Image 1 (cartoon, helix red, strand yellow):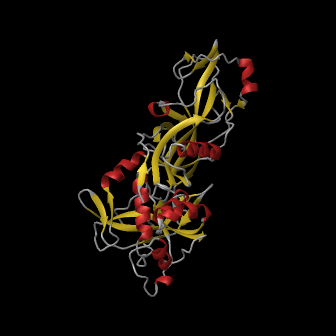
Image 2 (cartoon, rainbow, N blue to C red):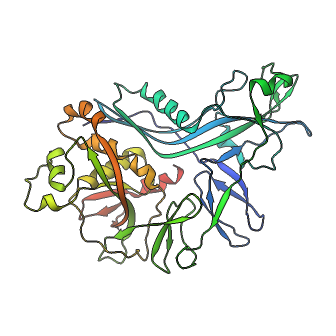
Length: 419
């Protein structure tokens, strides 16, 4: 099956001004940062959002001017679309109105990338307009928009590595509506007495929540990069991911390497019930994907699992790795030890990996001609997951796992820091 792609989108992380919750020291975060390590008091905190993070753009409004903050949904992530012509993919970084109004611009444009943002908190003065569309509606609108750009009718879509946030842009009313960023009139004749009726709002009531990064099992300091979605406690050999208000344990395994210089990349191994298709064991996979193999005795006893990277890479690379590992012979030689060194951070949450399953499935089912009719009737229900560290040898340009015949470009890993 041929894979195509929409034109690439150049992207950069949002920059956010922040203050340490312990000592108040100033800091700068990227949009993808979750683990904050204060260079002054050395306290590490993990940031938690209430549904999504809320930011505001800086302003140049006259002193004492009452500000109006208008909401925009901001979406960064990978979009996949399966059609009879194959799997199309694209990385997107877009914003769009969260409250319908002709008085305000449709998006924030490049301002979110050019300016430093700040978190919205209850002590920020101003009138914050309430959004009239929710996060799911915003995501649906985005996928519908790009489905229309696909070269043929779309059968299934998925968005992966999603970062959905709200950006509030500042305005104020003088002789008409003024842009608070540029301190210039917008051309709208919105009047102050009509604001509350046309666009309800009020004072902000959101707070950033944070967790101390102490292991819930033993109290030791946990480790992870700034964008980690899984933290490591080497003292008690455990892994943890953030939940609603506490850290939750993560099951894991390692495929040991004979090389002391091995680099370990994390992957999600997902057990799922697939309704509408026989796909319970490795023999079923051989038949469903029409692999060039003769089904051997005992393969019915090897359970089938989906795989997906637990680290961010470009859309095409993510799909290639997910497919290659899913189609590989089941890995049975594993232990429950955390690699001692050379560990790539897990920064793609399992809930995002789950969104790759059906796109992955569409890519390897054979014959391809039956997939458009078959795929809508297939129901995939995830049941369990495991974080597996696989060893790779460092070559000049690539990381290579010779046993699985899989390679990852080192440049792809470096470029992924901006996803």
